[in-house]
Length: 148
Length: 148
DNA sequence: TCTCTATTTTGTAATTATTACAACTTTAAA
DNA sequence: TTTAAAGTTGTAATAATTACAAAATAGAGA
Image 1 (cartoon, each protein chain N blue to C red):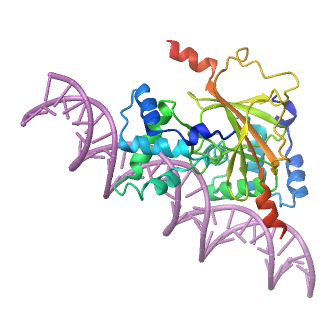
Image 2: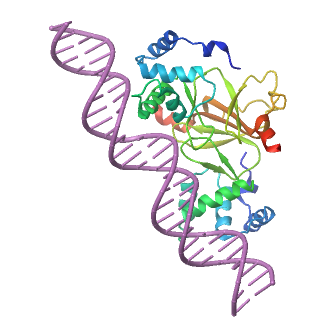
Image 3: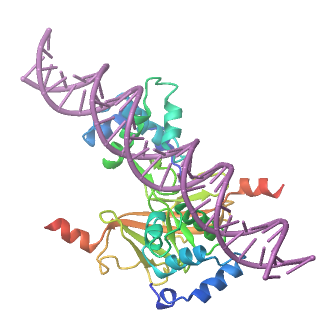
């Protein structure tokens, strides 16, 4: 699941992605996007802020919030609904599933491809209690309203 | 998906479920559990409170919170992570998936059974933008710690 | 290079959902 | 009828997020 490509993504590549999405590659945006691409922990706003703040002492948490919204809207990262209390973010866009440990809260990546059947959770040391499958999109009624 | 059984569930049946779970069938608990069994809208705490309050003027929102936690812990209802901002609840325990409309926020039930393939979203008038599959449980490390 | 304008960042204040907690009420058992 | 445990309630506290306005920055054009 975790490919070396993403961890090694360069600032130039991040910059290219931002420009392609029509966003100025500011230091803050590069930092937030970089953090999400270089880590696989599906961090909260607080985690991202804590990791970046030491290198960027003037960074504001509001900027992290703003930047994440902008990046989400641009489709460069995605937000996850894996716990109701905190927004969590993922910088890895290849389709994949998640396993969340109820004890430690860690989020593990899982392959999404089902052609080879479900992942063998027990081999991965994961014991599944509960599964949640959600699809997001638009319903007929809302698309009708938009069309008008 | 939506079976008539659940909508018609009687107070006696709800009472039985509570007792079986070791919980006293108080008026408040019957009301909250009943609300979740009689509706298919995956309501928030606020929605539940607003629906019950007119009939029970002394009901407190704290009671709704408390009761929902108790019911979840007892496995009589489940909480959903379908949006990060609000807890949402489901009183229908048969395995099923959800479709969330990004415009109106409505939550539709979908069959979970995959033996007949994926649900035909387009036939249902649903246009899917994004899919989120999450498994919840315990990882090897945490189970190791618990064992000690 | 300098100026101007739009964009981005920042800090503070406000908002919102949720939880903590202590007092009050109800229930069931002795 | 008394008593203790369980359940409910209201208020206050907490924590994540958003609103907003001021300050800083970057890029375009003179």
